[in-house]
Structures are given as structure tokens and as C-alpha cells.
Length: 231
Ligand SMILES: *[C@@H]1O[C@H](CO)[C@@H](O)[C@H](O)[C@H]1NC(C)=O
Ligand SMILES: *[C@@H]1O[C@H](CO)[C@@H](O)[C@H](O)[C@H]1NC(C)=O
Ligand SMILES: *[C@@H]1O[C@H](CO)[C@@H](O)[C@H](O)[C@H]1NC(C)=O
Image 1 (cartoon, rainbow, N blue to C red):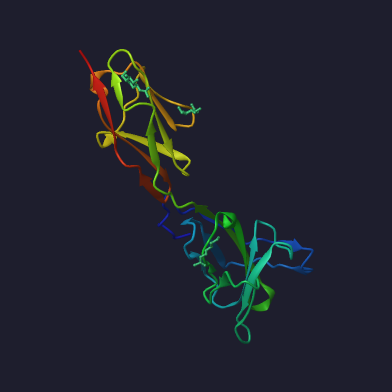
Image 2 (cartoon, rainbow, N blue to C red; image 1 turned 60 degrees about the vertical axis):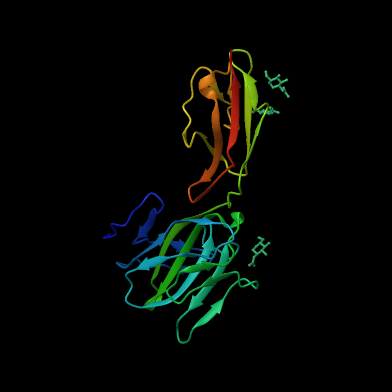
């Protein structure tokens, strides 16, 4: 395939020349030299998202989409037939639509829409092409809240625990605006939500922030100032 636009966020899952008997559909699928690919996608919940396809068929007769990797009526989502006229059929809520180029449009996508999607492209003369791709929906990261066990502490005596409350699974800690360096004194809980400093030293004084993130969006907490008293 001549696709050079493979990035970290786009995998191309691609099947060609499949010779299959799909018993449920009760017909033979003949091998074809044409190819189809589905462009996998990362999306933010609540947005409208296309799962685009690319195919080399000179003339497609129809597109059928399935959730998962199985082509049967239980997994059928929506279809568009171009022959002789455009005819769409799909779920009654119209939240998922097959576009004229065969791509699948999700309106107001939710986390539950994450998963593998399979397309069956019908060609002229009973030929079929099949491919699948993955849609991954990530939550909108709302502003994390940062709390401290104590914001005024004494050097060489106190411990301080900072807790980051966020709906994101991944957390980054910032000290004075840059990535915090962990040491024997400065440790994270296994889930990265709690930062413990013990014993506190004067060099630990300053602004702390935490950032919740996922592959497509992130949010930072407000700064929290730690004051360290020393002799
Ligand atoms: C999008 O879906 C969410 C629930 O999944 C709903 O609360 C919200 O109102 C929907 N937004 C639009 C614009 O339809
Ligand atoms: C915070 O630390 C200071 C200094 O060690 C101490 O005097 C104070 O009691 C602590 N406050 C709380 C709520 O633990
Ligand atoms: C994080 O800190 C909070 C408050 O200090 C505590 O209740 C919680 O158990 C800690 N969680 C972990 C995983 O250490």
C-alpha cells in the first residue's frame, strides 16, 4: 500500500484478497485485487467523528458497517447502498451515519463507541472487500484539583502529601512549571495521584501543579504554593 501517512495515532488495519465463506450471508465471496483500509482514530468524547476508509475499487455498490470483527446481523450497524439509488439504513437514533464515501460518522461520540469496526464494501458482480479499524474514545479531562495535607511545613521535620483529583488515568506532576523530578524523598503513589515529600527541605518550597492527560487532551490544576519554614 502506498500510504505513507502512518502516525502514532493512525494504524492501518488492512485485509486484501480474502476468500471467505460467510455462512450467515449465504454466498461466496470471490477474491479481488481491489483493497480497502479503515483509518483507526482517537477521538474526544462528545465530538463528531469520522472513521474514514480508503479503497481502490473503481465502483463500489454499497458499504456495510459492523461493530467488532464479526460480519453478521447481530453486529450490523448501518449501511449505504449506491445501486441503483442511494439508500441508507441504520440505527433509528441516526447517531451513526454511513457517508457517501463509505466513511462512518459518529455524532456526539461516547466512550461506549470505542472498539473495532469492520466494513464490508460491495463491488459490482458480487465481489466484496473487508477491512477493520479501531475507534478509541477518550474522556474530556476536566480541570484537576490539587490538595495538600499542609501548605506550611517545617524543614527536616514534616511530611507533605499532595493529592491530585482528576478523571484522567495519566497524571504528570509539575514543580515551578516544569516536570517534577522524583527522588528518595519525593515519591508517588502507585496510581500517581499522591505525591509525598518526606522529610521536606527548603528547596521544596514553591508552586506545585498536576496535569491530567490522555492521548488527545489534558488539563492542569491551579498552582498550589508550598511554604517551608527553616531555622
Ligand atoms: C451528547 O451525549 C451526551 C450523553 O452521552 C448528552 O448528555 C449530550 O446532551 C449530548 N449532546 C448533544 C449535543 O447531543
Ligand atoms: C502544618 O505544619 C505546621 C508546621 O510544622 C504545623 O505547625 C501545623 O500544625 C500543621 N498543620 C496541620 C493542619 O497539620
Ligand atoms: C492519597 O492520599 C489521601 C489523602 O492523604 C489518602 O486518603 C489516600 O489513601 C492516598 N492514596 C494512595 C493511593 O496512597
